[in-house]
Image 1: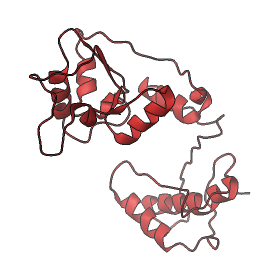
Image 2: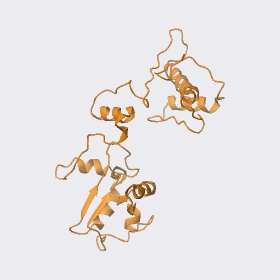
Image 3: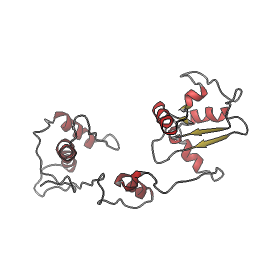
Image 4: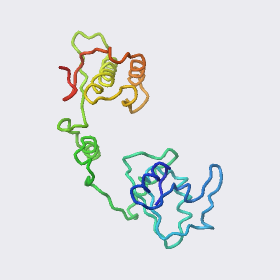
Length: 221
């Protein structure tokens, strides 16, 4: 069993009780060098399972395929909607687009996260269905609506709301440390991200006050 990263390989070994390593480790590939195992000296394996294969780039996939012996099977496990490869190429997605490649697609959530609003809404979005905004303990939707007399730009208002949620409401409801336990993610570098970052860095936690809109469980009293 192989993983693209060391952390993933360690986790897989813990879950299965079997040895797991990175693809680099399997091929004995050193940075800037050639792998020990290639088309001239192939792996001694009848089945090679690669988990999290969406993270495998085209160069590493090329080296791996060359090292698979004739008659052996290569099983790629992954989710094209999760982390892509850092390097070039979308190997798993491209393979799935080829009708000649046999595949099994799991569409049902089997783990305990089936009741998670994050997981449920991720599947709804992939199915081109709008997210379900209420009824979950781990998914909150905040609508930023400008007050009629507000002098703030919409991006400024949104930044203020995000900082209020992160610095005060979330710590108050869940007992988290806003400096150590809460992280704000933005889909791409933008003015909103820089505004939130600057406000968050300068914030004196515990003394912050704002009266923005809230979501169920985090709503202003």
